[in-house]
Length: 175
Image (cartoon, rainbow, N blue to C red; front, side):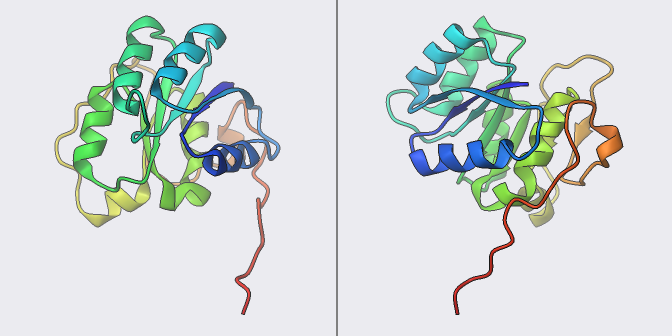
């Protein structure tokens, strides 16, 4: 799966690259520093998936998502954001996103979300869902074989294009 990472913070882009390079059948084909850059690079690179921040300069991630989905309907959008709210999730889905991950859950949920995208499924962050039931959200149009996924990890046998997961970091805080 070819992935474009769009976030205005270099440390986030590097972190996403590091997480996804750990034995996955994923290629980071490019990085974008704002929404306008994401739209331009999506047109140049034709990624399978764009991991998109919401709050970016020049063009926010929701508008960039709409533009990419209109012109490249085969490209999936996964929102990766600091905004932990149902309203932002609703706006992301209305913009054409297939998934939503809060940055505070990235270590746990990002790999699951990318794997869901590889299977053609939608994914919603466990932190947002666990706080309260989701309001009626408009799900993106998908084929009849697609499913919606929560953050429940799938077994390696269910992931056609991903190697079994290895721990990314076994760090403990300095005391």
